[in-house]
Image 1: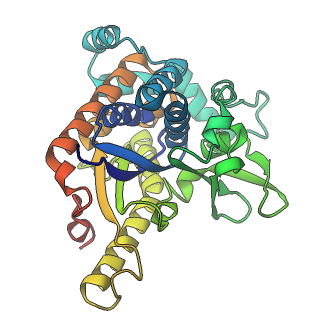
Image 2 (image 1 turned 180 degrees about the vertical axis):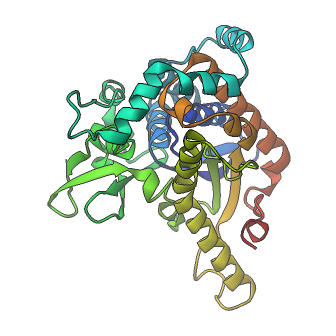
Length: 346
């Protein structure tokens, strides 16, 4: 029997749209020919990564899938596949659901409040609802030396720099910091072991969504699979205020990823041109799993407000996208990129 192909995973943040990554991971964990060596995650990607690592240590691949199901059931998903399919089938199209949520009085009131109030001036400061979920994670396994390496990204508010947490540094507050939207929640303050200071952190998506550089370490494989949940491309130019705000959100949360992919492309060209000898720098092999079609139908509203039908469609889409990747590009793993970075950046 052939040895499984070792991969690194880079899991983007995007609120409830992280259910797409749930579906991707669920499918990848079924594949005996794939071994997850390391995970870098931000926001929802951090939650998914922690669930996978903890579950794999306690129960192998099935334990990781069970952990993901449990996590998303707490977010609001229906984890019975038949029931989820029934809910999805009876619900309006995804674009209609997104518009309905975005137009609802409750969402409109929250949107207005976010524009005029801050978490520090609001009479009713909001606690991150994820706290009750992440505090129940088993941090003996999340922080364990065994299992996939896990890296979680947050943004240092004072310096504006990325902070990548690893190993015993990871805690409930670290995961909450990685998912801390500054218009909704107060910055998460953590006693940083590296600086010896009490540092304030916001969502890691501003500086690393997710960070790729931790996955370049020599002991890790060359192959990097990015699970992208913020669409890189939208055909229509946004014209109304909410559509413009939504696209600004997507662009800002993709910018750090695109910078790192551009840097990878630059290094690969230097190696190919003989300006850097092979072995001096890691030649990363890049792959991507995404569904921009579905994500174009959704919006920032469906990121912030979990809807069972949307979550079901996202999980299904993630499984389908991962299956398509395995069918088309499994043989590329360990040999070549399945993403053409030259076309992406030229």
